[in-house]
Image (cartoon, rainbow, N blue to C red; front, side, top):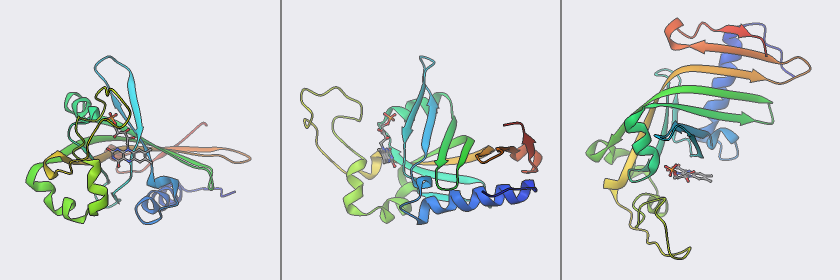
Length: 184
Ligand SMILES: Cc1cc2nc3c(=O)[nH]c(=O)nc-3n(C[C@H](O)[C@H](O)[C@H](O)COP(=O)(O)O)c2cc1C
């Protein structure tokens, strides 16, 4: 088990894991849980594919259908959570983000990079979450106008590393990611 004595080293380790989400299809960081708040007060958690991460500008990016319920939730409250559990390294990562939603022409460069076979995820008819009369009573209609890029601006990162003795730390953008140790 790794033991980190320095807050910076611990954060570097976590970012190395987050970065694998984009490049390593087998990494659990590829499929974070993305949590929004709904109007009825219940949190909504779902799995998404991490499309990009960038430590320099503190961003993580996801793609979604503009007609999905998370879009309405984000319109009402752009604050969201990202959760990643990495069993191999026994690390939990909890991230607070403020989400900027990009739709329309600004997303065309991203859309061009989405493989044709994957574009079916954006434009389902009827909209995702609609009630159906039977399980396959929907059609795929890939549509760039139904494609949204969720740019998640990271506000804080909390880490918990399990081991003989657990290690927990919290880092905030407002203190320039200086970090502090927390009791696990
Ligand atoms: C492994 C996996 C990956 C997924 N990736 C995405 C994704 O990248 N974007 C997306 O919108 N939904 C993705 N989904 C579907 C979402 O989990 C969710 O069901 C869908 O976005 C509708 O969510 P909502 O109704 O809460 O908005 C994925 C589901 C799984 C199981």
